[in-house]
Length: 242
Length: 242
DNA sequence: CGAATCTTTGATAAGGATCAACGCGCGTGG
DNA sequence: CCACGCGCGTTGATCCTTATCAAAGATTCG
Image 1: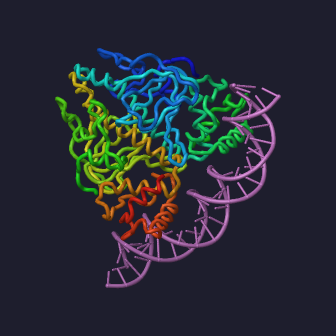
Image 2 (image 1 turned 90 degrees about the vertical axis):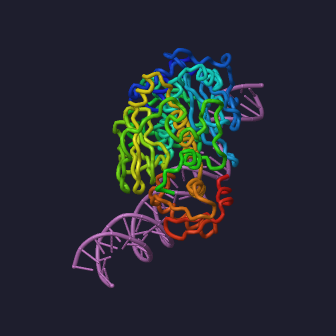
Image 3 (image 1 turned 120 degrees about the horizontal axis):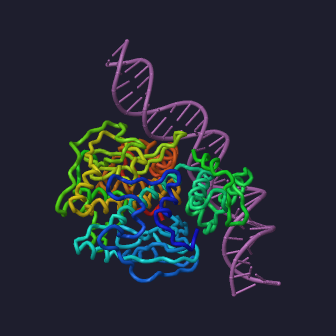
């Protein structure tokens, strides 16, 4: 799962549209495969701004309100983007794995913060460099647009998950999504804590724990270790979700 | 509120970032003002595909799974985009008012459906025409990119709303957002039913009704009519939300 | 080994859903 | 013009899911 910079196409398609592969949109080049390298297929590529940076578990990559001039791509590990409310509540917007772009926002400032779920490496890009390409008469790299559209689709799915799913359904979706980058029957490693999962799904740690126990009792999953989970019956798990 | 094709800048900025205006992102032209006309400021504009189309209340504009070759801009009225689950649950992703673009999706097929909340008029655009511009060596119109980024920001805010807000907070956010395109103290008209609001906020009609009653008792709002609401104390209403 | 953090489980409480009934507004048709 | 019916909204009573509070394992790491 972590530690390898697998092609973005896999990473993106995998995470939130597990059932059906993302298809090409007309001739616009929205195929997620083009996300592999920012600018591939165009006359110039978007150069990263500097070397690969490493972050240790729970280290902040950027905070809410920070200048959004830089955005990132995950090289290895897992990153969470989240929002903190003043009373301590936290909503995790997304988990990002190798190949995913994050911190890619419309405003001057980051609306969310980003933290390392586990030790991870990322590479930065500058909006300013995009502007430079544009000033030189280049087209906006389609991969950026494609990534924006992908992120939008993912955010919409997340809203649906949060808006009309119960605890069991939420966890079933989460597990099947997360499992998509493993072979069937393999043990998947949840890099994040129960608290992370809870904050992603709008639940509490206790509920996560209880639902996992029930899923195990129902022989839908195995738990060889706390963070290691095997989906014993992916089909039935998916069937839980309407 | 409805019936007038106000500039998009207002419509977009208004709906989901009421507190602070959206700022320009670097030099990329992400200023939402450029959304006013698709392609303004570039050598060619994206021509609409045909005349303005009208829909009556609750009429479907497109359904989930329909070809996503066409997307739309609201000319007047209100449109909802939503997802239906097989057991009848419905999640409304967003309400779109004059100037808003909807049905703007990455896949071959629409992931959501769109329906008229009240009688409304929309105008269509074709992806194919964008491809044509690109084939002629044009850059991807920045407004499209800006709109994708705006939609992304909105979807993320919606997730936060659904994930970690209680019923009162959800309604407070909804009302203040919806009120942003009226003068302070004015009566705002909720074009949508309680069921629509409920499905947008992940609640039930009964809860919506009860919370509105409480807000009225607490002198936060007035209800001159069922669909007409006046925010008596917008500041205190906003303060409910952390 | 021991402390801190994470996870699980249990007991109880609360927020919102569900079920039920009634009221209101409005359009239709007698 | 009024009566009726229907969709929509409100309110009440009760139930259920999930949150909260509490405490006891498990795991990690110094």
